[in-house]
Length: 155
Image (cartoon, rainbow, N blue to C red; front, side):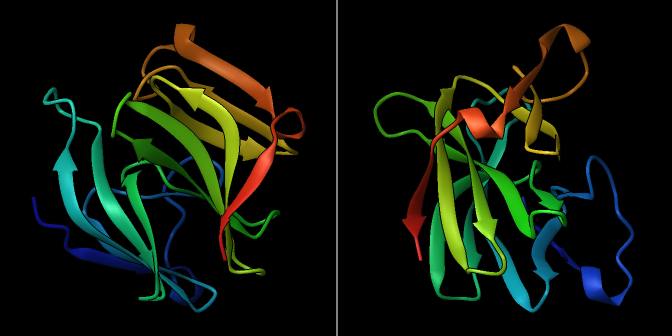
């Protein structure tokens, strides 16, 4: 699968979905406030139509590793990009992470998920689905971000 589109929020990108922006599978580069996010090596991990993961690089320097590429959310109030990191080494699990655009730091929240789709971030609340999509409200959940420990994983 080839990724082939770039979006630049400062030069006319329309907000697509969710809180302010939700990244599409067709994107390979996202530019927000002079920060360049590149998505490479896109691949399907469960062989059932998704989720799709790819390696996320920031400004060509920081490699974040495997993230779900079709669920990245920009939240302007926190000046952050929220995304799902995939850990597939021993036990397959997912964690919510954020990239702080002001500090140029990457954080991981301490809760692990078997499946997750971020619907929105608002007022320190994470609205998500226990699935890789938002198609069934019975899987809709909410968490206070204040109840989760945030750990710095990369500067």
